[in-house]
Image 1: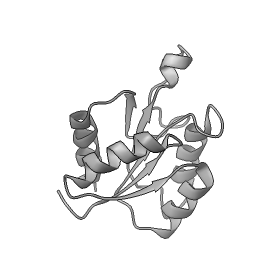
Image 2: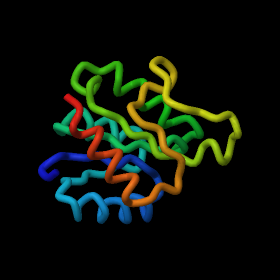
Image 3: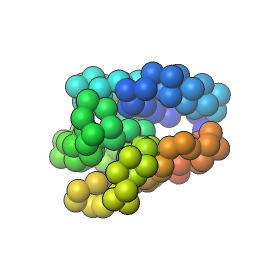
Amino acid sequence: MSGKRVLLVDDDREFVAANRLVLESKGYEVLDAHDVDSAKKKALETGLDVIVLDVMMETNQAGFELARWLRSQETTSSIPIVMLTAINQRYPLNFDKDEIWLPVDEFFEKPVTPDDLLEAVSKAASKE
């Protein structure tokens, strides 16, 4: 699959750089954002096929809030969201996707293997 645009949103720049290489090796065009404000701007201004989103950035729930915001915007409401996070390691509350509070298409715990990331992004990018 090539030509699909993916936005990686994570404040861990090394994590973004490593996953950028994985995705670009399979033909994805990768954009990145390291905070909520830049993620919102890029999501609104750029035609995206998938958003890969962390939870704990500026706050411990920034990614949850961003996912709900993305779903509330006409231009971003249907973009598939893959959440990659370590939040369940920090807070043993067993977060998972939910239509209202956590409206994401896939939810993965970090660390995620390159193959699992590619499979999740490919699956999300193929949704219409």
